[in-house]
Length: 164
Image (cartoon, rainbow, N blue to C red; front, side, top):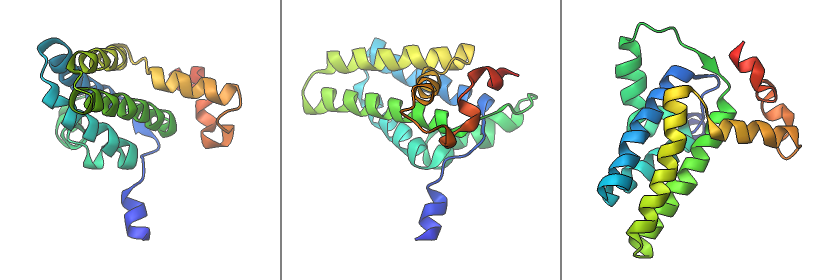
C-alpha cells in the first residue's frame, strides 16, 4: 500500500515554470474545444487534470512532456512555489473538465461543454501568461477565512511571500 501511496503524491514545492507551461498546454486544448468544437479533446483534458490531482505531473499527458522534455531545455531557473494551492487549482480544473465531459457526452449539450472549456481557457491563460493562478488565490482566501487549516500550507497563507 505504501508503494501506491508514494506514487500518488503531489510535489511540494512545485516549479512554477513547469506549472505555467502545463497551463499553456491546457490553453491549447481548451481552445480546441471552445473554438473548434473538438469535444473529444475533453477526454484527455479531464484525464490530465485528474491525474495531476492524484499524483502531480507523473501520470498526466502534459506533465512528463513539460517536466522531462521542455523545462530541462530552457535556460530558466526553477521557481519553487507551494504545492497545495496548485493541487487545489488542478482539482478545480478536474471538476470543470469532468463537468464538460458530462455535458458533452452524458447530457448531449456540446455547446455548454464548449462554454465550460472556455472558462478553463481563461483561467489557464491567466496562469500561463501572467502567473496568476485563480485556484491558488481561492485557496489562500479559504485559509484566511479558516475553511482550510493554515497548517496545510503555511507558505500559502500569505501570497505576497510567494513573490519575494
